[in-house]
Image (cartoon, rainbow, N blue to C red; front, side, top):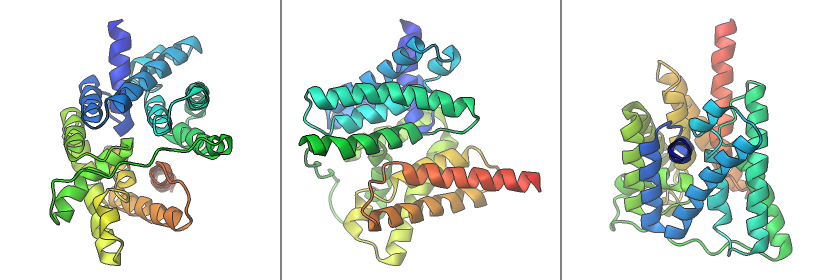
Length: 279
């Protein structure tokens, strides 16, 4: 029971690439401040991901580290955006099973999966549920401290949008959770969100969108992923910039971004590293 509990909260922490149960606990508390229902969905998503992985005989060490929980967290949070009925719940359950299978297959092939199972599966859910007449609830407006403190408030919002959250106090707990696990990761997450806001200000992107963290959350994840993996700062900063560019292009194309810009930018930078190592 203790092992499963730790795996569940590590799965929450792994949403921001942190193998730390305390981080996941702070994430859960942060989500609960904004929406108790979404917090319950996040915890269940991670728990069910671990249980499904055991049922499918995935690596026990990977399960303990929460690697089969974090895509489940994000899928459960995405499904919780809909009014819960039989069809969304069924879609979420099938999505959880598919996420475990896809993650295991990508890992077997040596491909860093990150949140790609969540992205692919949630794109399918978002495309199919409206066909059945089921649409997401209108998103609540983010809660800010007030004023025009764009750089101060927009930076933590980038952390919150990773898990569909828009409450400033939730974001502070998210940052604290990452910091608890890794100061380096927290700093690079803050750099990523800051770079997104500065880029948006430079090119005159809508200030409200910047304040909501829409351009920041993929930059946060990219900064955390690359900042922990590269000794120099050039590739992480370039990767963050690429994630912001991909985010902008997808928004212009009216495509559901989710965490696809983070995945593509990080894969690209890992490819650059491998190419440099080979030459």
